Image (tube, rainbow, N blue to C red; front, top):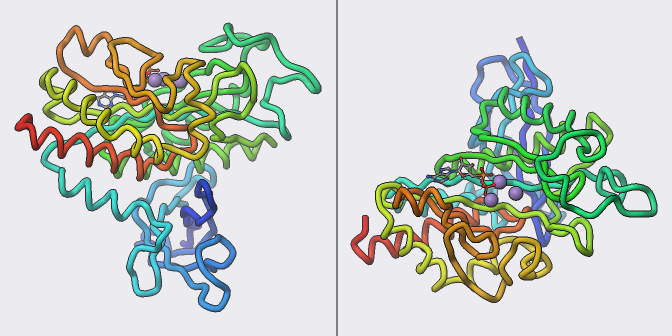
Length: 337
Ligand code: ADP
Ligand code: MN
Ligand code: MN
Ligand code: MN
């Protein structure tokens, strides 16, 4: 029997990579082979030397096509099999391996917005809905826009076996969130990219688009972030490593913010539950801080931290690599592992 394998990869679009995919017919049960594509159509090569290589890294059941069909997440390589310059996963794999002993976990909260044309779903034509306040975790047709798509996306992620941990309606109409994890840096990142692909693909069936634009509606509306919850084994056992992790992230604040997603200065304005991008802070239960220590964590004196800075359009390979690198090296230096 033949099956359809949807090969999915990240392209070279600036300032934020886009997802691309195409279909290969395979014998059921066969290992998905290395494949290729035309890099000159994806901002990944010049026309005179256009071949790029697709190397499968994660295979899951395809909930859209069903049956024995599969989704195949790929890394992009050059034809000499070295990582392509747009491949941000290879460096994450190396860093995760280097600090594997510290057992990093990530839980990522992906916020996003449904759009119809240039308007968020639920925004009336030529005007604005009631100001935000009642939409977050709301119920009812006056507050909720797109729930049938959200439910279908959640089912699709679960059918694909992705480690989704929850969903909720967000502060702006048409804005939603799903959470992935806790899982390792590579697993959470691969899963988040697949969940994003499934989001776009699921919404497509409803004639709606989804965007991870960090500021989809200008003005007095919340932006969209990708809060990144993080712990190492030492942090899950003790409080001192959590404070040390916050301090380490503070010492490299500028470098982190620069790599946390394009347009971060438009979202981290100091308003709408954010800390200003140029000012680092951490605090217990503080949703106006760069990093929040959940109240339960302070009470238990162990657990995890929430980096609230990453934008909705961030690349999880980059964010998880930087957090592992910054925190794990600091904990090692301080003898806290
Ligand atoms: P918020 O209260 O900020 O909205 P959410 O419930 O949306 O938080 O997301 C919290 C995320 O943190 C979830 O994905 C959860 O699985 C993850 N998480 C929980 N414990 C840990 C941990 N020890 N390390 C890393 N992530 C964790
Ligand atoms: Mn959340
Ligand atoms: Mn949220
Ligand atoms: Mn959060």
